[in-house]
Image (cartoon, rainbow, N blue to C red; front, side, top):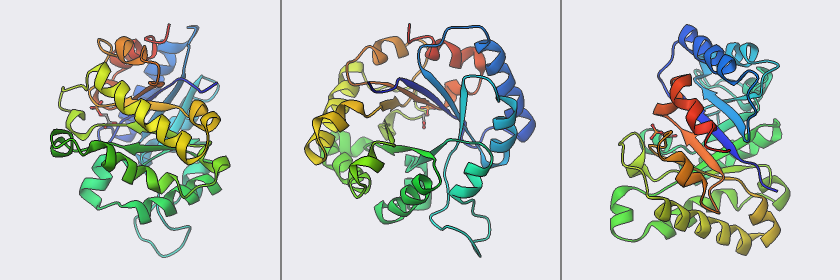
Length: 251
Ligand code: PGA
């Protein structure tokens, strides 16, 4: 059975102190609650270690928002997958649209990052999603298939260790959520594509999260779709008060 997951993506919004405070708020809000999904927070590099420490013993898993495409060495300013793993973090977001857009990340680079993340025991949360023009010109399925090609270089065993996040770029931080029908259509398309590449069992076991202006008010309807297994949450993950209702959408 595939996992249900609600993951936060804090982006570049929290100082070290703010991040630790947010992690503690979330930990307190979750204490004693029955949670029906995995809960993850992906934080800026600066706070991954402190957040991992703060949430120790809770249900919260921790991740980074990126990692280097290189293993080690003279890469000033980079943070490697092994460094991320050394904090106790278990996840890493890869291929977020903001990295693709502002840092020119492409499949060749993302394949290296995927391999290093997996080699270091991290679960990649691999993002795919079309731009507004690609949605409007109805080319989004081929765009997503093209992005999935990076994952398809992996063996079935390695692919099975990855989580996918479908994030239509036009819905990220815009308040424009994909309708649950639009999201379900793409999630089903991705799952069928995985079945064609590997097999039906691999496809059925893959968690595919939705991201893009997901919040407490729309999460229940989105998560009720048969192929939507949770969410990757930006803005609404920045406060325990707004993140909790999304987690609680899994009744
Ligand atoms: P958003 O961001 O929830 O603020 O739209 C989602 C994401 O980019 O992961």
